Length: 365
Image (tube, rainbow, N blue to C red; front, top):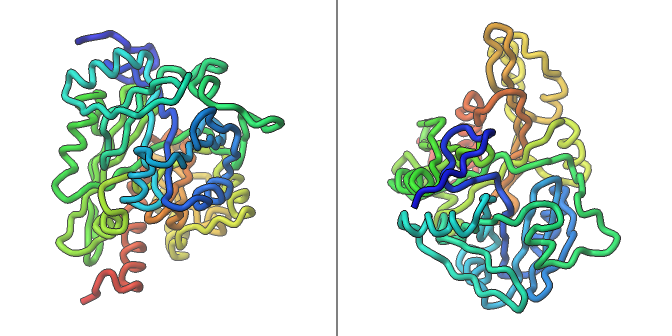
């Protein structure tokens, strides 16, 4: 089945009509664990499902769904993995065509039971067995939330929160030898393309990563795989999570310093900042970058990109500590740079490795 759903803004052929992330679905074996974390991140509870124990949190154009429905796919998923991201949704221009095409290309369907007067959301089996929903109702006033949810009275339906607008990317951790399988999954079904490949080695451990982007340019999914024989960072995640899954979700801001200040005020704990030498070397690494190094250092924000020929292409980023089991969050600001902080990867990897050594997960020789 072929269909021309390529849009003028697409980067390349878009056979599934992808148009960004729609939502991430979360679940927990115990209630009350996810809600305070989302509030800490700047999200507001704005709606409740009409017939199920499901709630909607929002910040900017980022939708987080908490599914507390008993005996649901989400409940069983959380029983196996603990508090987790148990599903994700892509926006598509025609969900029926996209779903039919996915099945024709070998995707495995997942049937999610629907309640009375509830929309049927087509889904296929995604990372770790989590549903990957295909959603074509996302226009204002006609979205799945307008139909299946009841908005809370007096609550802003488009809260600004800490200034995060969209999901920038969503990283998957996979078992050793499975990175190519998941790359083929996204390439075959959705025509993702690989835009970066990393092979990062610390002193004792390593990881391999393939960063994929969708034809619409709005869905980016890096895939991580353990590169060492021992218990490296990816292996530790897989053991803690009890399987493959979403390792972290990155939010995009237009003013990361202001967003950081708001997160800090709420009490969010960030990953250990890099040593002072990192900031002392910034000008050497990125001459003429023009960013306030002292302000970045004060907050532990990392800077990457290029300044060659006076063409500034910069990326600001920082990470939270793990918040939902082994899952953490990234906060990012892009200034014409479409990378993933490659220049920071090795320094970050080594700092996480040092933390593993300190906790006794990795044995220093």
